[in-house]
Image (cartoon, rainbow, N blue to C red; front, side):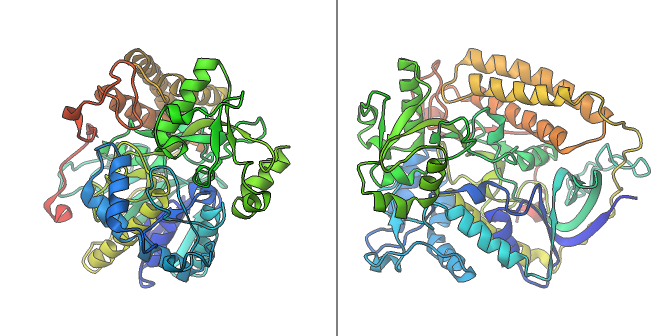
Length: 557
């Protein structure tokens, strides 16, 4: 008999969104936090730049809202933008109270003593940071706090397989319980998830009154990415399979500056360098960004990434250069100690020479539709952080709004769960996972080959610049891969690589479907077939799964 667990709240994901939610929930609630690797391993840990918030007297909520709307290229939900921006200062103060040590500067007396930097798309200095390792400071602090909470059980090395809907039981669940008898909207309710314990190899059952997806984005669907290996779109894929709608999946943000070095896997060079005066140069030393945008290096990321991609293809170069060596060495070492130290390890001294950089997949702007209370379509299910589509980012995320979204919607979800907790029903029983009719995989090479093929053609066909023909080629390959993966999933015992590949091909399909529907160029979606913006398409790209059922009245209230 495999293990079964019961809690009030199940949080899938352990980054800023998931941990801040867990810390904001009442200690009267029992909480389980699932983490695919170690608790800290995720995108939050590697976030360098900072968190945007209106902390300076010369700044304003209206300015932050306006900048976010401009960066989002007409597709942001203004209500959500205002909600998030208005909560920014309090979120920073909460982190400070929890113990995060942000960089201070006496000259910023009106900014509560925080040193503020400026990044692309921002009209003011409003990015609070902990040197150039803000994510690490946040993740370390939240992890320390959560490990001291008696009401929180932590399950590391647990990969979620699928959500459990009370109206449908998973086909790989034990045959002693029907695989899905009722299909009425009234019966639909998320009551937990199946999760693979990668240490034991067993799939365990987690039951909960409320389930929260905080699994992050899906940038590992691309060959080159700034993200760690865990960013495989698990939560997006699981919620989609459970019947939740998705939106704006075509808008994948490519960070303009990842270090180009054979030993520097996924090493991001923060946008804050450009905020402090770093310039983008061609290999011959020519500065090129002023030719593409009057804001030059401080243009939004989509513009900068496309400009770099264009120049690399035009001259046949594998990289461009990012140069901050004109600033004083002590300034560089003080403000960017992590990047400086890592570059020195690789034989690069950024105080003396420019750094070779390339764009890489960085952030998933779309996701599973989540409302202003963080609720997804399936009752009992919340989606927060990068896995969610809230309308904050529109067609392009403005720098340093991502951690802010995690914090704000972590608090929002906590408040909604607290409001509903007293009357929300206990989860019904669910069968344990049935592995009696599967066998050990006989050819692991199938998984590794499919994994590599998927990520390579997504990079080639669904990258920074797209065409109808490229998208059609990608869709054909996705359909073939999906069939192979389904067969493998049905016949063999699951492992983490298989589960991640299963999720990646699902997310890849959502990205391609969305890109095919948007017949214009807007924000992060640029296609040579429709290079101009079309204002008649100024609406989110909505994807509705075959299993979708409208929200029941109680959940929509």
